[in-house]
Amino acid sequence: MRTHSDEAVNLVARIDRTITMPHLIRRFFGHIRARSLTESEAETVRKCLSDAMAKLFFTMVPADQRHAFDVYQRSGSESTTSTAALMHDIGKTVAPAGAFARSLATAASAVGMPLRGSWAKYRDHGEIGAKMLEEVGADSFAVAFTRGHPGKPPVGVSIEAWERLAAADDV
Ligand SMILES: [Fe+2]
Ligand SMILES: [Fe+2]
Image 1 (spheres, rainbow, N blue to C red):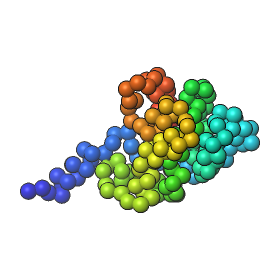
Image 2 (image 1 turned 45 degrees about the vertical axis):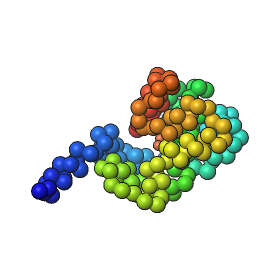
Image 3 (image 1 turned 135 degrees about the vertical axis):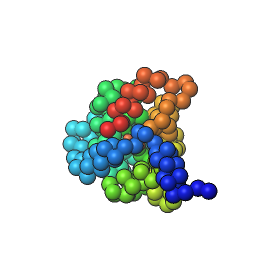
Image 4 (image 1 turned 60 degrees about the vertical axis):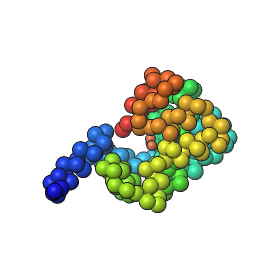
């Protein structure tokens, strides 16, 4: 017979070790304290992206624009990975949620709780974003990174580029 303590052990065993409490707290405060892009940063984004992708980029909330731009800079501002850096969280545009709800959705997802509605969309923002990028003709690396982050690189992509971006995204 399963006991409550068995369930608790099970739950803890299912927690994704990359989602720690300090990580969630950092993300939470990073989101609420994020500065909007400056005009010169926004101009850099427009130069890196096609018109269709730039249009999508600026539909993200300012905090997500800031995160994407920071990932772009931390990953070396390289043209081969710029679209992936700037667009990897574009799927969050269909899952509007405040900083607290996002932290809860991340924690709930990490322990395997079933999610519905915009919470499920937030969890699935990688797959949703990858489809959006395919529709606007993004490069295959950007589509793959968007779909697969924060996981391991699929066969056929540059592992160096993937790990550089993953490290830049893991704040
Ligand atoms: Fe993401
Ligand atoms: Fe991200």
